[in-house]
Amino acid sequence: MGKKGGRGNRGNQGRPNAGGNASGGLSVEDAKLLELAKQARKDNEVDLTEMRLAFEQELMEDIEKKRQEQEAALEQEMAARKDTYEDELKESHKELVSEIEALGKQKEQIIQDGTDLENKKRALEYACQRMKSEA
Image 1: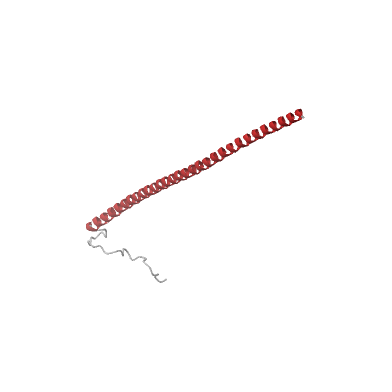
Image 2: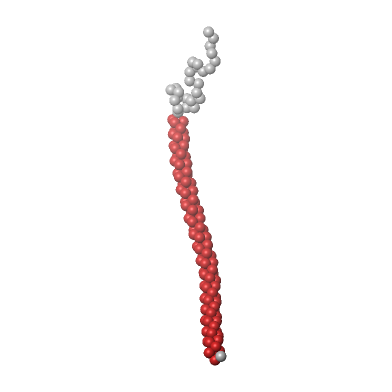
């Protein structure tokens, strides 16, 4: 059988050791650099998490601020509409009161006219009776 391609039994073919130590491990400088890189990565993760939390907090504050602004605007709109409605009701009430007063005066006039007619009727009846009695 022939040998197949691939890595097979070629041994450690990683990057050559910059420090050249015989054990094939990292040199002291590379180990320090690796630790620094790991620490930087860890710090970045913490920084990213803190940034994300700060952004979330800022977003929540913005949302709350906008909600409060909308509530304030809604309350102002409701107050303005209430004032407008109350003004319209007052005006309507004034008109109705005037109309009722006018109807009251008209009623009094009709009653007075009725009383005047009743008095004229009695006077005519009395005059008729007097004419009959004189005749």
